[in-house]
Image 1 (cartoon, rainbow, N blue to C red):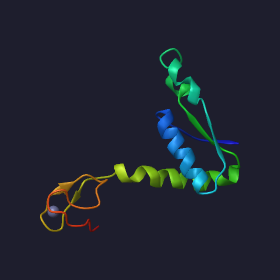
Image 2 (cartoon, protein in one colour):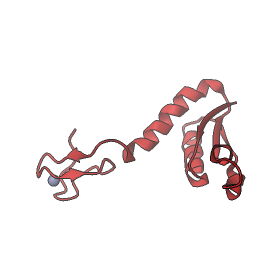
Image 3 (cartoon, protein in one colour):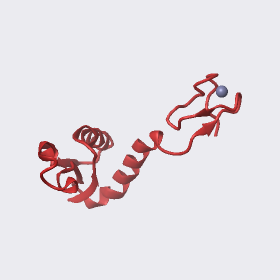
Length: 102
Ligand SMILES: [Zn+2]
């Protein structure tokens, strides 16, 4: 077993676990029942933890989690048509609807 990541909340943790399982990686969530105790124990100790069963899966699992988080991270992008700025998670310009073109 290997600790892969700590999630911000149990919803995020279960999304991560579902995604890994869909990719064929056996994993387990721990600490999900402890979030109600937050404030009494240090956050890192009660944050939901995602563990992978096989150490050899850890690297691939990490890649998958990174891809999962990528859409909402990164810089703003500039529309090639109207030059408006859009948030990284959008695949097309919010103003004119032209598809993102990196
Ligand atoms: Zn545009």
